[in-house]
Image (cartoon, rainbow, N blue to C red; front, side):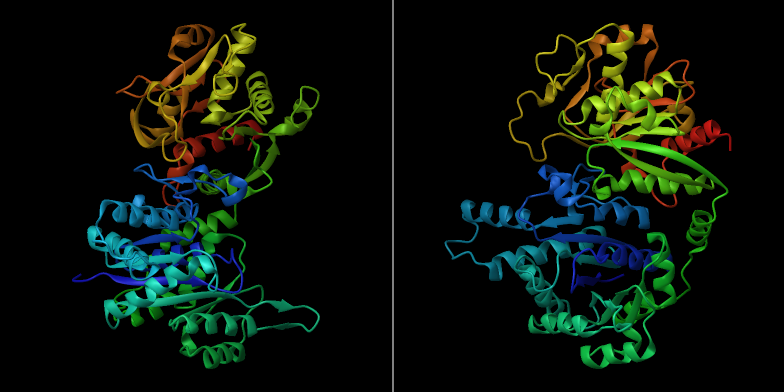
Length: 537
């Protein structure tokens, strides 16, 4: 295609309406029609990236193949369109200002006064266009974080307003997602918040081409006509997004609403064929009609906010569908696991996953969960810190190293079975300085991991500073904890397994980041199979 087209997705009335899911669904539909597409997220916070944010603040920090710490919406993008995102797919206000200020210090502006307009908006526009031109894509969908009217979002709104006219006719489209609340007292849906939200957009110089109405109840034809009239939108461009049981139904509903056809028409692109969605439909059908059921406990310290573990939870959805099995995921606060209570709390589970994280809070509860899984032969997966907890538990209870620990948690431990990576010892800054992104790993013949993947060489994404201390490797292996995955370049231990246990795997990397609808992650698929065997289904 000669030039890239751009779709901008904004939100109004309230946050967390699902702009990311609408963006991903539209991308999936366009992709299924044969168009090359990617999705970009513009985040209005001043942090350079979410890498230093507490998960309670912003949910999961998602890591891309090239090592970017990004917004969790990028995980949705990858899970829906099955294409790797990169550093270019997530832009923050912090990164924009960092770039502009660096240019000013370097003298790039030739002494001019640096201002929001044009310098900040020009940098925003440059980053929006860069991802499309560099990858020669047909369509770039850009989701603008926050809610229209927020002070933080104003530079982005102004930038895309300018961009619409710079791109020229039929090269951009605006999709605005709003809420239509239901008042139970009067038993009616109210459109006034949507009207006000679109009015704010208009005050900023943007007329939406499509209005998507998030709702708990079906939107009548009368309400659609009313929104069309008051918001200056074509009647067929008023689209309903009703609540559904699973986010994976949204692309199918958006296709029924003809969202993809409307956008293609606005972009003057051919509506050349029906979307190829058979595999997606089969996945949704299997997901909604499982033949089996298992209970899996996920032990972590951020369980009060499930978004902190979004990729893990979705990986279980994918793996459950692959096994035609409903995975009932029980979120267990690791701080609540004590020596007196942990056995009772974990007794009825078919599998246990110990989640990643940082810091010592809840660590001992995670170690107790590992012990229960090991002693009772419950299928177990430990991810990042979860793997490190498995190593510490094994050292304490089977190697006789009672004070074994990670030097992250106790820097005076006499047995640092988990220790700081050499490359991290001189690092002072926190943001973007960990071992990040995809690295190779060689799997040992006959291991559970090798059987799950079906190959010896894998690439998985990392986000950590501490690692298995190889000085203890021989001692561990003699006692039955075997390193079965090794980084070929550095000899770092990436995977450990227990001999004599039906399914016990600890991984230093984050397999959940690479699980998608059409490519469920093999470790999660294998874990769910092991859980089904334990459950006898």
